[in-house]
Amino acid sequence: MSALSLKELHSGIHGGQFSVMEATATYLDRIERLDGNLNTYITVLREQAQQQAQAIDQQIRKGELTGPLAGVPYALKDLFCTEGILTTCGSKMLANFVSPYDAHVATQLKKAGGVLLGKNNMDEFAMGSSNENSAYGVVRNPWNTDCVPGGSSGGGAAAIAARLAPMVLGTDTGGSIRQPGSFCGVTGIKPTYGRISRYGMIAFASSLDQCGPMAVSAEDCALTLNVIAGFDERDSTCANEPVPDYTASLTDSIQGLRIGLPKEFFAAGLDSNVAAVIERAVKEFEKLGAVVKEVSLPNSHLAVPVYYVVAPAEASSNLSRFDGVRFGHRCENPKDLMDLYKRSRWEGFGEEVKRRIMLGTYALSAGYYDAYYLKAQKVRRLIKQDFVDAFKDVDVIMGPSAPTTPFKIGEKADDPVAMYLADIYTIPTSLAGLPGMTFPIGFAADGLPVGMQLIGNYFQEARMLNVAHQYQLNSDWHKQVPAQFA
Image (cartoon, rainbow, N blue to C red):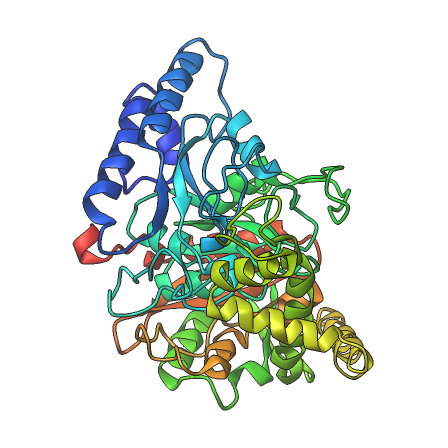
């Protein structure tokens, strides 16, 4: 049953082949049996999921729930607030935080009849590219448990790869769905900034954060987007744009589709083994009738330094609320208010979070705001303009999701800059607010997965999903499962 897609799970449940209880039990049993070595979950909701499944079974029998996710199990990255359930953000700071309300996307999935299996492990406050920064331990890659799964949504990506959930919601600030999607050989999409409400999604960098699904296939991502996308008045950054049926155009031909390959993404820094897999996949698109041409994103080399000014600056502001006063970790026996602030934050935050808070605070400080933050925002606008110009000539942009296959756990732990460069191909898309996705296209010479990054124009998620789906109709890379989890 764990090999079934969301559509197949829905058909099996509503066709009477198996119950929601049986589907839920399959995943809960796999988590209990297989997750010990991977550490993809922080919280597993066995009892609650079973109760929820039983109630949904009854609703389905009465004909009260028929939607495409009714009865389907799923998991959430542990930064989505869930009423009455621990929400830790992978941090000691929120180790005791039980949310009093649901995030918008949690509410939407609950209304749709989904069954919440648990909360996925993640880099602390979504800050990381390897899932080594969690206070709850390192997440391991199912394809090679000596390697990282990517980050910060690495717990969710690894859970999909090992079939410990059929769909998860992650978040992407600078590549945190797309890079782990590539490292774990799964499909994931970061929609246009504002396409999905961020209400109840604990913020890292508010002008960049966006929720998105990870699943086995583009079709599964499309089914999920149909449920969670749309306007929410509680989020001031949420776009009031019509939501199409993302499944309606999946089967459209891509004959004549204009694909742009950014020359900057295929320059020095891209591992030759990854490049070879990317080039083979591009040829497959040409066989399907697509037209490939070179495009240029001349300012993309500035994306990483821009991101690591803008994102830490916003993190510095967002994380100031965690002060030991209202909720979260509080130090013992503070001498005074200042001691409470200092020790609560020092004890509650991990090293990478502290590093980014310090970077952001420095960039926003008097005398440095104009030199760093303001200049970074100006360059961000230039990066966006590069994409605007490129989309005058092409329909979608393709390239690598990451410069390498998954690296070894601990390999880059002492080199923050090397770690930051793992997101070099995904950050430009985030800075521009564009939609981006990753889907698996094969394996490199080292036997580890490689993902293709697909970038669309604003609110063109349906076209991107169509392109990925057409590739997946003609390949089976997305169906591959690591041997020990098959």
